[in-house]
Image (cartoon, rainbow over all chains, first blue to last red; front, side, top):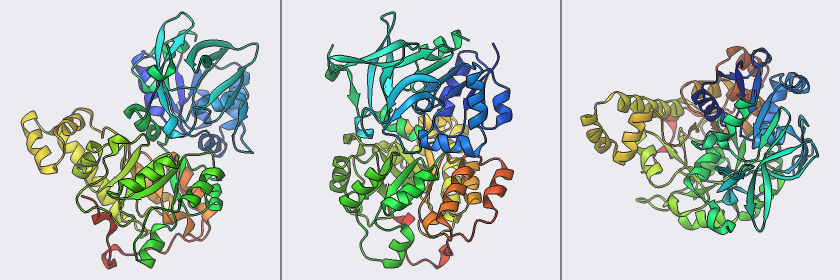
Length: 192
Length: 297
């Protein structure tokens, strides 16, 4: 396995780099098309999706990232990163664009404003538990047929998909990078 | 298992976590929904909703208070990014109102007229997170001890002059380095001198950084200013009067956003600074009658 890039335009880049490095992965910042070319996989971090989307355009990265995704580059998007990967985004800006690489519909700030941001235990497919941190998080409303649900959050008598995968494209509505638990990154890195 | 037993809001992790999400970005002061849209369009990570930007507060004088809730709500409705608002130092009732309005961050700010000359707000009891200003490490750690989840160096708001922001940022980062190089015996005296909680001083000595993100505010008015304070260790920038008091606010907003992200690439700073129009006029700080940074204790 080669190196994993972390898109470093804005957001919690440092935490992703630290988690990947702790797992023995060569992790590098990506802010330019040249830096993108040198990596074998990419993490889209948490942050503000409108700001990151804007900076992807001004940095000349929108089309190169889109092309790499179309060519099958593995990617993990957390929170804002999930919004950028989602096919459908509700309650976004009128001109919100995304890579459309993951057949899910998400609602921005789907659990509410910051005062509703929360921590809760999540359940993986094998029944084990990982800590979840949701900050003005998007809510996954719908998954297409090719999307595998890897973790869920049970609440209000129902349960939401919170970690999903469609081939090489992974998305989490929470922030695995903000906790000491490295399970999600380990699963992603293990798939490379 | 019911979610009320396992789902926790207002934890330190989710409060500091939102500050982590803002890193690398620009938070812009706005006084109406139109300005908020300009900020969001330019790639701001959040807006600070207030009735007057600091330059106008400075000019107008009088008591500066929390903004009208209606104005805050209009801005909340206009944008999808986080909306912050200011409460007076020590005015926990204003903070309660802002929390009830659902603002995403409260700035307990020296830009407004202080309500309490001894005490800051006990920020631990709130679900909404707080940002506070600081001029030095002791002040920063006192605010964190009171529950602040984000620190911004104060600078001198509304002046368009970056000199105080640089002074405060350098003061904080230099003292952090001093803590790191001190031996264990010295840290007790350092905590005493800083008038800061000992456990926080020990944490800074160990990690070499504040326990919460460190942003910069007060006097940033050009892309190069943003680059300067980011290179000096600020993880994001607040821009108050510097955008909407400049000649071309839309271009200035875009330029400062790009400058914050590409702060260590001079070719990008040169590109976005070219043909930008004039920055806000600004003040020489030695000529000021009122120094806002001296508010807060």
